[in-house]
Length: 339
Ligand code: EPU
Image (cartoon, rainbow, N blue to C red):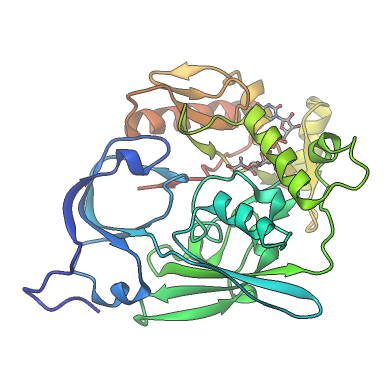
């Protein structure tokens, strides 16, 4: 549904700079811009040639000016919905900061999200690429997602089973123009159990007899701070490429040639490879191309050393992909959305 001709939605802005709203700090302007603080606003959008739903801007490559309408999802709210014998249920508005929400959940005595501490971005963006780190993916802790469906013009609730969560993937990523997530409902299993399957995290808490959720969150933050640049200090969008998943045969061939290649067999028989390792071996760790480069402490992270444009990022993306393709016959896929 669109607003009637002549009536303008309150708060609609024009020609808005987006550089401060994406963590890679790329320049570009939105022709129209609206801050969404309530789902009801989504029923009355002005006509626009295109529409983009923006969260924290931490998974975005802005190519330049955007001719359409940018919706900045800023819906607030956090609550403990209740408990049953098997779980505690929490809800949060799409605009809540992810890391603050994780901290708040721990303060409420509701552990279960601690492995995902310090991930940049918003609650509403978390399900889109099914954020994951240190042995946990957010889809494992989601009961349902409430999203405005632009096809139907209403908010519907999708149970987790309808969200098609997979590694860095969901239905919302598959159908980008269709949904604007407005609220997420979490299910945190009781009794809580520490998730320490990720070797580096287990090592970090090894001196503690029985680490609690707060101690695990602190360990996750410590590891992240050592390896990943703070976007406030050095502009970046976290992991820039997904870890590629290849056939068992392809992985076996690579392993024979490169015995130190990190390779993780998946439930479906395929093998996940470490993109950071491939990029480092291809010579890109700490190397720059113009104002952008691959981070010196974690080759998977593309950083903007200052003044970069979307075209600079595209050039480096292409160069890294070409070198990894040539050396390993592996096709890297960028993790962020290109706009
Ligand atoms: N590695 C290298 N060189 C590098 C980087 C990594 O050789 O420059 C090797 C490491 O030594 C290790 C392997 O690659 O053997 C995996 O590295 P790491 O444990 O750092 O994790 P990752 O695969 O690089 C993934 C996620 C991160 C997440 C960490 C921890 C993806 C694309 N990235 O990174 O997610 O924090 O695991 O679980 O799946 C993000 O998505 O923004 C993100 C940071």
